[in-house]
Image 1 (cartoon, rainbow, N blue to C red):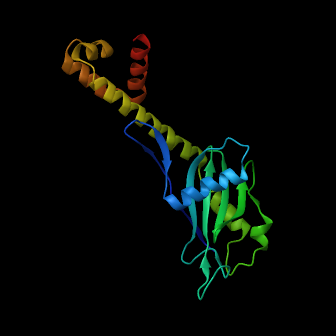
Image 2 (spheres, helix red, strand yellow):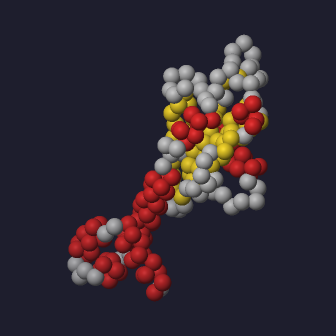
Image 3 (cartoon, rainbow, N blue to C red):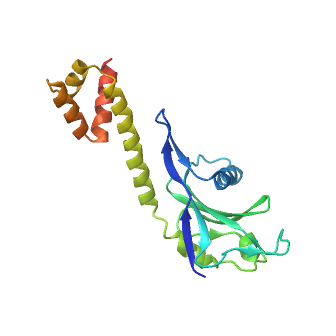
Length: 201
């Protein structure tokens, strides 16, 4: 069976420059609830969300809770702390733990492997699609977004300063040059200036 991943999550910020992972409500709430139930003692943070789909046909089907047509099970992959993966399916109002990748190879639940599926990928097929998730890239995307937001926060702060303060911050005597220099700065440089100025205040 050919599988593919559908990315569900992205990083968003609000007008107060707070950053949060955003995804469709149903899979996000299910993933958060699943993490609380399975890892109650761990300080895991959800840092990514995907859905496993069949390339041309439904990947996970069962007659459980079915009527006249087979039920398609929604199977979600969560990323924890940019380090670990977990996979679960929603069957009716219950969650089926499918796999977890903490260190090394994917571990699969007996519930998944012994469940009476109409059709479902093999553990190896799931492990193969999980291996395509680049955790380092996900973390890098977050860091890039985080600095972008910090840069925007510094922009707002800088534009609220009067011209004399802007000149002092940038080391330029002419207001137009101060604005031009600020625009050329990286988000990291802008945020550094913001931090230094406020530490002096």
